[in-house]
Amino acid sequence: MLKVGLIGIGFMGRGHLDNYLRLEREGFPIKLVAICDIDKNKFENRFLPGNIDVGNKAYDFSKYHLYTDIDEMLENEDLDYIDTPRPTYLHAEVAIKALNKGLNVLCEKPMSLSSKNCMDMIEASEKSNKKLMIAQCLRFWPAYEYIKECIETGRFGKVVSGSFFRGGSTPKWSYNDWYLKKELSGGCLFDQHIHDVDTINWLFGKPKSLSTIAKNVVEGSGYDILSTNYIYEDGKIINTQDDWTLNGDYGFQMRFRVNFEKGNVIYEHGKLKVNPNDSEGFIPDISNDDGYYREIKYFINSLINDTPIITADPRSCMETIIIAEAESHSADMGGKFIDLI
Ligand SMILES: NC(=O)c1ccc[n+]([C@@H]2O[C@H](COP(=O)([O-])OP(=O)(O)OC[C@H]3O[C@@H](n4cnc5c(N)ncnc54)[C@H](O)[C@@H]3O)[C@@H](O)[C@H]2O)c1
Image 1: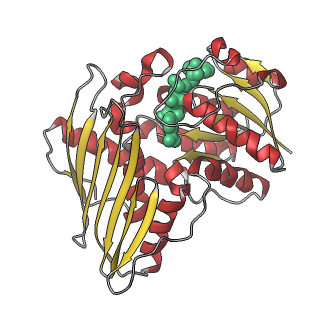
Image 2 (image 1 turned 90 degrees about the vertical axis):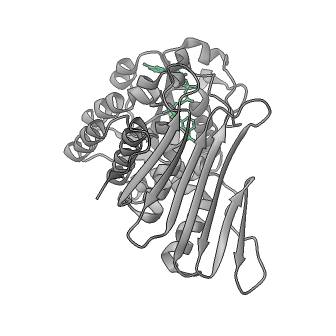
Image 3 (image 1 turned 90 degrees about the horizontal axis):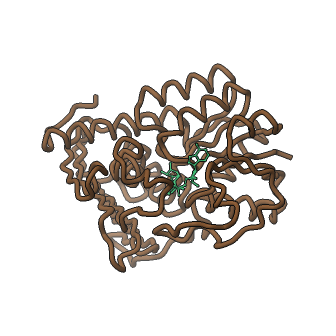
């Protein structure tokens, strides 16, 4: 039975908690034993709503050992791993601390705000011989897994173009408003857009170069709207767009359109559709589970079976941060192309 400590019970932490409750119901050999959050209000079910529905409204916290201090939790509990849906500026510090104590770590995305911190996290994992996985959930999202498989099998030939979008309301629910402070969250570029940066890295590898134009809207929050073109040797046209100032009733959307030599695959409004050039379109049969559930399950299985973290391995997730750093640099220079290879 793996013993888990969850650190951070804000918007994402509640999503993770729901999945632990589900995994326990399903008889998975895990037990969430401890929860830590600096803000005691959370243990009284006082939450702020986010832009997607990830968690229940109320929980029975009485069955967990509750902490407001991480060191105390790490000292008192005999855990197998910690899961850290905490604000991004704290990811590296807590991951390294736990790895040094001999615990495995499931760390929320983005891995960190600097590639230097990412390297320190990897070194701590290698030194302690404990597993570190970054919760880049799209690598476990069925529609994104499907497109990855189409690319790898060449079922529709080679990719000729791909366009990826994420957008939603401005995140106004966070602890001390950390999302809207560039130095703490990295802004939309390092937070929301990082999912698509990671997707293009995972699907196509590091681009040869890139150009990003971006705009700040909310004072102090960094880039809130951005658009990036990625250059690849084979000339495929790949771009991403993000905007976290789509307020009002917009909610949240993630979409992609990948065009192959022999058809295209579209994901929008939560639906995946394949349009082969020479036959009727179809809706592929994919899992109904979301990436949050599947990433946690993958991590647990890798601990139980002692198998390597391949799908979201930290070195590849660090490369995502390197690409995001280049995007930020390009945006600072008004869209100048930055070489990555
Ligand atoms: N995978 C996804 O799709 C996705 C979606 C949203 C957020 N996230 C990521 O999850 C992480 C958390 O985001 P969130 O939206 O839950 O933020 P949040 O502000 O809602 O929650 C963060 C929680 O951490 C707690 N906290 C802050 N400092 C702490 C400390 N020193 N010790 C213990 N607890 C502390 C806060 O009280 C809060 O409950 C971020 O890295 C974010 O990028 C991922």
